[in-house]
Image 1 (cartoon, helix red, strand yellow):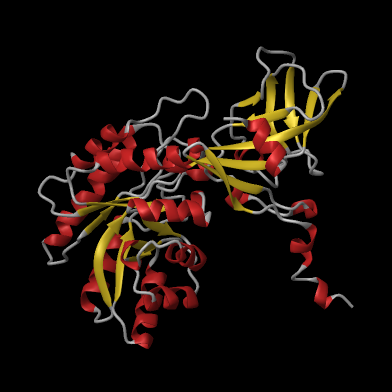
Image 2 (cartoon, one colour):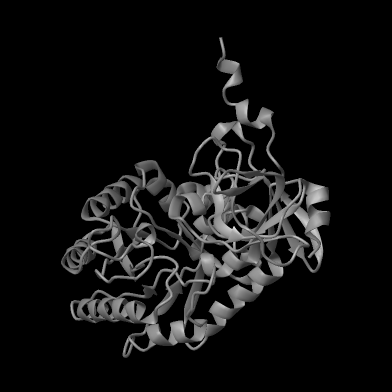
Length: 400
């Protein structure tokens, strides 16, 4: 890929996504579950660009959404309502109501309080809410604590006993229809054992529910399948699927899988331009025009992304790649042996397709970067670069 040409045409910082790679990754996870009824519901929070969502819609994908805004994006991109799931612990009443009005596949219930709220809102609307209960199996996913979601100390889901109470509530209620069960133990999972263990626990709960005539149709295994950022040994989609399927003996359910990072993470890069180098007594800094407001993962999680200087090979003195934001935590990489750079050299930050642009902000009154898609070797702008006027339009008319 000619990154110099892209930088010249679209400026930097810049996000670039290979749509062919996105399609290939979607096909791989879909194929892994082909032996059973399945729905691949892309986790919109990973990358919510409308053009990317439209690509996935055309491939047959559903959508796992965590806000009404994401639901609206999915619908606008052509993903049908019957393939959309609404997850998340903090749904507002109006979000729940709108999701019910849009007749999405189901709402994931994360607490008893939320179960009662969904029931009340459905009653007020005269509707029956299709629901799934998110079960927290208290399994250590062996991932970063910020992206762990399956332990009892995490805010997500309910324990087994609470889940049983919620299903009994739904069975008795004329306004709730318990169609699914859900678990998601964390993100960037690289070990199969915790996934199988969690799936077995939740499958046993489904069998217990069947005995009291609660017929679960959707077995939602969440997402979280890891990708390679550095030297991780990742799980093959086939092994992932087989691990889950091995726990479902005797169950006639549609498997719902919600990959996000797996589909888009390695399909995207972040391109930033060198401004200059700075040397102190003990440190070398490569100062670039991209910053933590553009790509937050390194600052937020101390996440590792491979970086390279476009067109330059070899190693040099270790350097921190840092941005212009006025925070010591503003860095894209630390202590990397990179070749000497000159102003206007390009730095490529790899594996930036997931949780990159979607977590960006306008901190320091910095406009967010453009996004570009590569399709069959051709580049296409899919989001314009912001400008100062975009940042102030919601404020300027109130200035007195």
